[in-house]
Length: 239
Length: 228
Image (cartoon, rainbow over all chains, first blue to last red):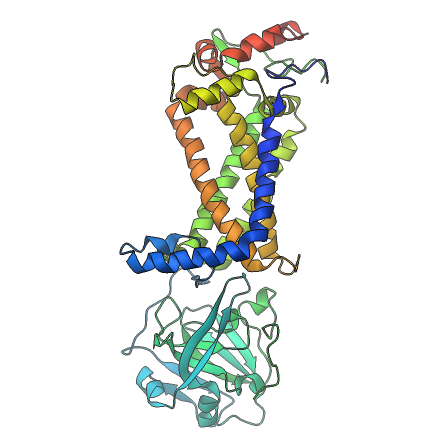
């Protein structure tokens, strides 16, 4: 090739290659500096959002925030008038709860990190609601019951816990998130919150709780996710 | 293969239509088209993952993720396949090397001088050369950080949050740069015609890329039609 190829600037500085390598270098440097840059960036965003009436700061990159996930095209909206949580399966007293029923039960507040398998996390998110254990006790679980299956009014999502996991005190049927009613976007009016596990276990738009004799894989578990979504460092045997 | 280099078209093609000059071979146009579509799918699905309102509108999270991941992974493939084409390789060399007049082009941009005489260019102008190198590097960084997010724990010393931070910021940069690239194309129908049909008018080539045909003619290889 050499000697024959006469592109229009033969022998000139390889600027194209430099631009490529420069970009790779910048990428590596920003990966290394990311933890520091990000802290500054979040500080800036926090300050900017205070004075930002347009909400445009919400569009800026901020891996610290929640991201919206739904596995279906559209999710019906439910509120006090039409929300229902059905408890059934291997229980003595199947029951359907309205939103008011759930609000009338003892409320528990759990503050924990929301950690997504996609890498984003939000630290110290307060969730408040009814302990899953209370609902299970009220229904009276049969001795043959071994697991709990959760279904959602989006029509597609499902999750599961073993009975032992479900009875932990940090497993909530959450009505509030960040001390406000759970919004539709965050899975409201009622979602699951499984504090010691990855956030995909915390099913949004919860509409059904069913006690089963064995673990039935949920939506993501059928697509390769862990059946137990323990976070690293979670105490797996806490009560 | 040997008779290729420096010519503006593959050997054995029919002579140019009168007044037209061969700018891109079919292989090059396919590389550009495939890369363009993959980039578009990648950016649109990215927007659907990134913006809450769009995510709520589109939903189907697993489908969008699948499209985003695979369009991203496949993005370098057309260029790699293009390496089988001698015409494409010759253009990569042109894109890589900076001539004296390329620096003149950049100076003209800084001084906002727009006339074609003030901005001499070979087959590719200095802006196109820098764009090509930069976007190639940016795509590789996006692939790397994307794979880190996809396969967690691939490199435990880089946190996923850092990978996402770089991926997000660079995605914005790429969005604006690609929009700029498209704007330039929309401003110049003849350039688009060159990418669509492979041919441009000789007058356009001599005006916008004054050093292209001249340099090729002055090179050791004469015009392609004489090669066989």
